[in-house]
Picture 1 (cartoon, rainbow, N blue to C red):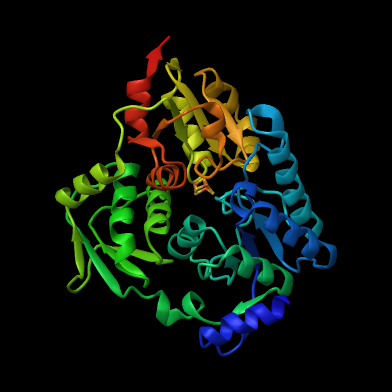
Picture 2: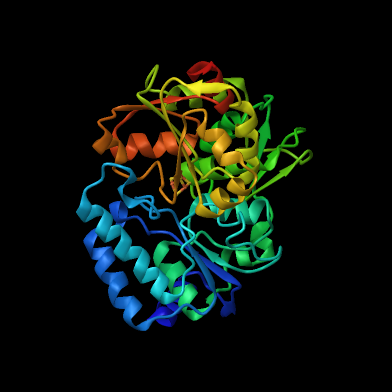
Length: 367
Ligand code: F3S
């Protein structure tokens, strides 16, 4: 079945053949998204299928290590745990993360992989030089079983070169600014985007840019350089402010969510420093992977952040869980464009989007 599916996708993409992959990363783990039909399908597949390459899985709808941590219904928790069991039975690592490159799944540069989860796909292609198309949960599952993917799209060098150039005409200072750039440009093209800018963003900013392109568009890769001939679109202060206004629908929020995509170890280190001697005034959730949690714990960073009153959450996607419904929340403060997009489109929540430094300044007290 896996081969048949990959063969059909390959045919559709005019692929010459299937190629071997080094790893797979699968989305569609969250019971809130795939429901009973998805759970039954995975249970059936897991009776016979086994993964032939290193495979990790996306976040889910609960903190799987502490399932009762939040007021979610027992039925939801049980079904979510059954989905994770099915993936583990097939051989997946229960990474439950959308930043698999943070130690759970980091093949060498130049590797061909089959990854789902748009934010990780775009980051892998653009920052890590790992080659993957933007797979669906099902095609990544088939690739994990077969160990193959069609030789098409971003597995071919010619498609990795930028075809849509964007001149950045404004100084981008924060992660949020990079998210706004990605969200604005995302719908303009499916091809590789070439950003032209004198600035040199760090990995945290490039992660925000990747996630935002994935949230609003279909491109799976960008390049970043200071030079290029001509351009198809430009992004200046006007576009930045308009995009911000489009996402911002509320002055304030009941709770703060940070970690979409999940917070990386570098970000945890920064947060531990920024939050020293400070206490949050609102309920604040910081989302990260169990792997990052483990690495951060060894450095004493988790205890340090917990002193700020922040609740650290592993495994759980903040943007696609019904958690807010069960917490009685109807407006949220977020630092991520992708979180703003999904929390509004999926749960109709009011969104107050701010940069992380603005959140710390505005919503913590010195103690
Ligand atoms: Fe990750 Fe969920 Fe955001 S999977 S990228 S935290 S929508």
